[in-house]
Length: 302
Ligand code: CP
Ligand code: NVA
Image 1 (cartoon, helix red, strand yellow):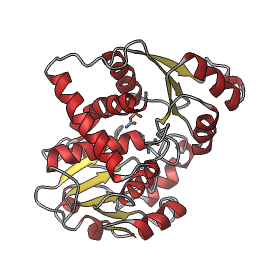
Image 2 (cartoon, helix red, strand yellow; image 1 turned 180 degrees about the vertical axis):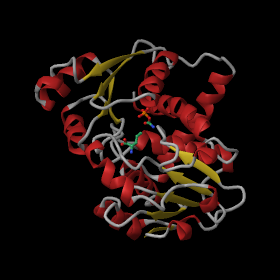
Image 3 (cartoon, helix red, strand yellow; image 1 turned 120 degrees about the vertical axis):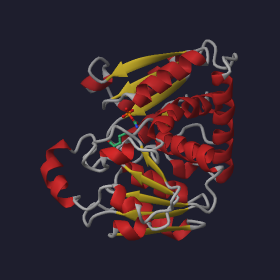
């Protein structure tokens, strides 16, 4: 694996397997209450330019459980938030910390930070990608379905950071990815083009959600208004009608389909309450798994 985790596209199949395997082991140790303090004395910095519940708590708690500590660095309090340049911040933080997680807007900023940092940099979500979430989702699918090979995964809704991350994973791993997004809300064109060209099983983008979820093993959705897009809310509510994951849509999937969502969710928008709170939903396990997967990532990189 590389020094940093900036994009799923930097991982090959062996890396995915390694992370998932390690997460299984760490989850077992955690459940059995057994010692697994592999990062004693180490420190993770966590830069947040956007809100977070799961990412912050799972990294912070995960670091504590591994024997280290994590520092929450909000852009409201650091000099980075007042305009200190990324290069200086990265070089200086590298002298104090053993790893850094960044949640921000631009993917370029995270990549610039990583270029100047001598410590591992982990992408905790950008407008473009959300690799830690994607890895937890694959881990969850592996737990629920014994693996991902040959499965059909349908992504319904906005062609956002989660959609892009799914395409990057499908470019490397043998599952079928079928996306349905309304016109004008497609995933990143370069990521999509590369994913379609390189996917070992296949990537398809279409407009019709019924076709996307037909015989799917997994149906995945995410919010229609991501962080930073709040001004587009009204327009998006109009454009995404028909893309809700609800009972009627799931009638076209496999009987034992599992429903996933990275959360936070908006019941009645991208997903019906009876679905996200119903028996096919695995969202709470999926959220728990952020902890185990993040610990695996930190153990490997730090
Ligand atoms: N799914 C996810 O990243 O959640 P948070 O925004 O709460 O971290
Ligand atoms: N697409 C969402 C994911 C949140 C975890 C956002 O970027 O706000």
